[in-house]
Length: 66
Image (cartoon, rainbow, N blue to C red; front, side, top):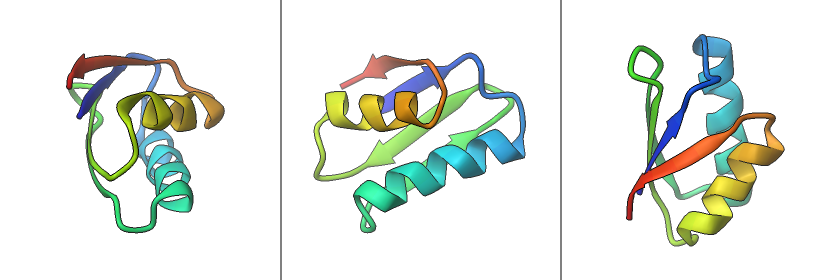
């Protein structure tokens, strides 16, 4: 699944998102590109759950792919 996170501005933001997802699913694979503001996640969690985790970390994700 893929999210656009427009308010992700730096490596610190990316780290916060990665940590938040890892706390909920330690086996998740997370790829983050700060330049394109893209977060790609491979997880057994549902897309809505991952979106909620990113929101809880203080960001505003928009799902871009199932």
